Image (cartoon, rainbow, N blue to C red):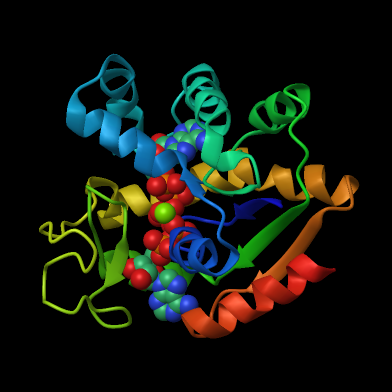
Length: 210
Ligand code: AP5
Ligand code: MG
């Protein structure tokens, strides 16, 4: 099954991708995590992506489509995948269609913007494996340390309150039109992302059946 998780910054795409990945046994592909890894490694596209990411803008379609295409060609994607953060523009969605990638379901996780702002200021992330935590709602077993790889947790650069506002604006302008794009294909389902993490996952699993 090929699934897209859609939603504003902080809606819980990464969080849900992590639990769905375990329960459905298909890999998660997070373009945000891949770009952050490239920035940390200082690769050529990482250098190009950094300024846009720090400003809460989008990285160019060419770069992101290129990394996505390479990733879904890998062996572990044969039985399906969960896309977290891709597509984010109509041209990216058109590129997926042009590649012949069949998307089964697009699940929008809807969360009120005031809640989003609170979530993002409390978020901590592992830059090594991409795991996401929250200082109140999803604490790691050992404070400040990733449960999975023992790395020190950090605050994402783009989680500064001013940048969050820019990211939300970018979302409304560039990414929200994808709801109509996929609704027109009969693939869109919307779940409320304000319940607990397990309850939201249940709603997503239910939406995937429909
Ligand atoms: P990306 O990493 O994809 O960031 P984003 O879309 O802004 O999304 P976030 O990671 O902030 O939100 P999320 O929905 O994953 O929330 P999370 O689960 O962490 O992209 C970063 C940047 O990379 C972009 O700005 C862009 O520059 C670039 N980029 C990436 N992909 C691109 C593309 N395709 N094209 C162009 N550019 C691209 O949850 C947030 C917090 O809330 C966490 O602390 C979590 O623990 C907590 N939380 C989650 N669910 C719940 C719950 N149910 N109850 C309580 N707390 C919860
Ligand atoms: Mg994320």
